[in-house]
Length: 462
Ligand code: ARG
Image (tube, rainbow, N blue to C red; front, top):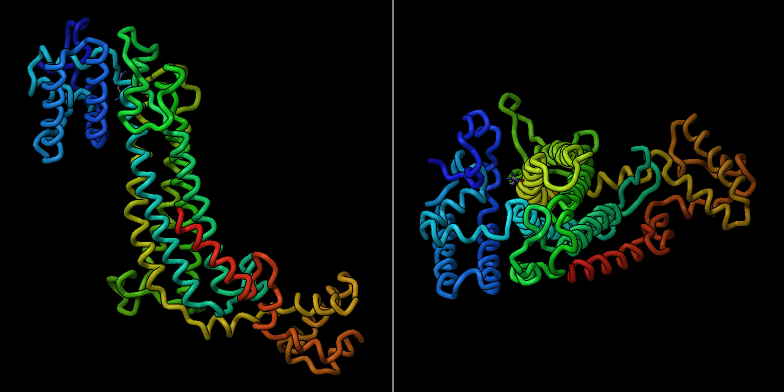
């Protein structure tokens, strides 16, 4: 007969159709090491409450150790009939210790408080793994910025040429966004360091157990949850984790989109390393930015995981409902996707070849120094409203003649405005335009150097 945790009041076993529907063991078995750690902590508080003798506790811990080793070696697996990881491991313990001792561990706990606790433990570990992978990407981007300290590129708004910026400045903008993601992971972890173990099914336990001791044992720095109903029913920690991972996906996707554009023949700003690009089965000349495209694609999937989970949680009455079994797959998937994506993405960015001449050739194109003419006029005492108008007139003449701003003659300048003396040429070069934006956060090499130092100092403590 199947070992069911709830067989007593049932005359019949579950139908095969129910069993197939109900099973989660094929995706929640990854919680097994955490489940066993929880069981050890629980055995200790049962002992302290006088519900296990010292000798029983020893044998219990021994049984859990063996079970843990068997799980790690792949010698113990859950089956569909086990329903979930908790049931599977209870069967494993019963097989190893016999029903008399093995059957004592379930006192004072429920799968509801177990799963809420183990899910947190799993995600906390993976928050740390993902945080490390994000830091690796930040290091690669910082390396890229450091390798090109004074390379100019066309800065864009609306994807149109706007003003020249330093390539390093642009790359560090992405690093800043990733720093906030890393900070979100750390702050999430801080909030999630609270253990629901001991909440039981929803109401707590009558057995005099010590949830704070279990929390300490399992590494929850902020102790146990203050409300057993909330402890078993809340999943905002999972939704928030899904958000932070989706945000990382979205930030990667924004970098990815740029790499895809930069890598086109038309831009020719970068070349991808062979080891981080793919070919075509039919077109021999092709070299495709698949890593960037997969990043863009997977960001949609990560957003889906977040919205799917939110939809599951919406309107759920307190406390535990079986709907909550749907909480794990999307969030596990978000971990899995980022953990395969990030190393490839970092490799792609770390090995990018940057074509400086091409970027610098295009940096002043599209009249991107028109703002510099306007700001030069302002420095001569011309009101900005007039200066904007005059610089716009320069662009109009250039467009009509098919020339660039620096190709306007002194006569043409003078004709547009008496304020446009030949000295205006001084701001019509890219290095001058960059160097003049030297306030905090600006694109001048000196300002970007300050930013780079700050970012590196942050990364060193992150
Ligand atoms: N497998 C369930 C989950 O993942 C936990 C089991 C709770 N089942 C129950 N009938 N209370 O949410």
